[in-house]
Length: 182
Image (cartoon, rainbow, N blue to C red; front, top):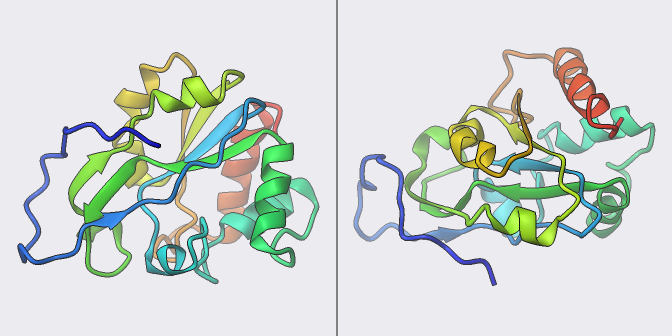
């Protein structure tokens, strides 16, 4: 089970003390994981489905499909995750829990970090961490302490529409290629 530190971010408390505390998804890691993509916290669609990047407009799975030349979007979630693991890719989020209305990162309150040291324990071959978006990248000082390369990537979220698919793909391709993942 993931240990959760008692350290919270200096964000304002949730507007309602009765707001529900949301719990993140477990990490997708293996001893063969070389690169971990860290999101901030799963959106509503992902929490409901208990799947990473479940929102139909999230570009995560389409980007990986384009990078690897395989239709991951057409596969079941279990097969997508298996393909990612086979290729050395892990998935997780920087926050273990938080309070939030909706799916926007800007609405995250009372966030508690995941114990990111688990990455080194469960993925001894880890070479790099890629932060998926700005909110995740706020944890870069924590991930840099793990002694692996750390990259900030443009968010795959549908809320990050200022970058088109091709521009995001170029950034993701560069990052994945530099770590032998493309």
